[in-house]
Each structure stands twice: as structure tokens, then as C-alpha cells.
Length: 67
Image 1: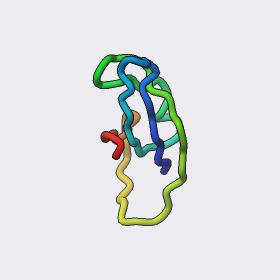
Image 2: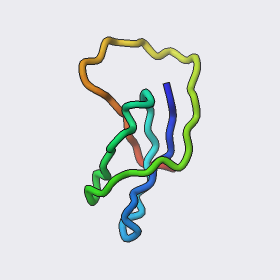
Image 3: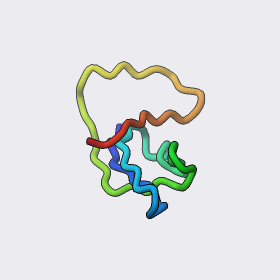
Image 4: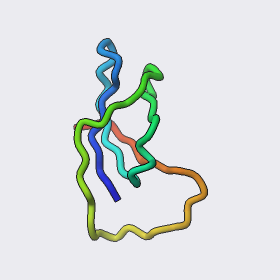
């Protein structure tokens, strides 16, 4: 699983988000505030933890506002 820091490509918006998911899940993500594309600033691979893997039928990315 990957952790990513994302930023909106619209300079007037500047929304920053954190996201967790698989590599393919980060393609074509849109900003929830303005609808513009999100760009990854950094990626980090996440290991361990108590994550239970469930079979997914569609890509899933967990987003939250960056600190």
C-alpha cells in the first residue's frame, strides 16, 4: 500500500490531501473542492499495521485533508 501527499493543480485552489491506496488508484484523481486534477507531491510505501485486505471490485483511495 502507498501513502501519497497530493495537491490540486489549480493555483487558485491549493487544496492539499493525503491518500492511501495502490499505485493504479492514484491515476486521474480530482479535487473535491474545485474538480481539477490532483498531482502527487510525494509517495511512501506503507508496511505492517492492522490493515485487513478485503477484495475490491473498483479502485479505492482514502483521502483526507493534509495537516
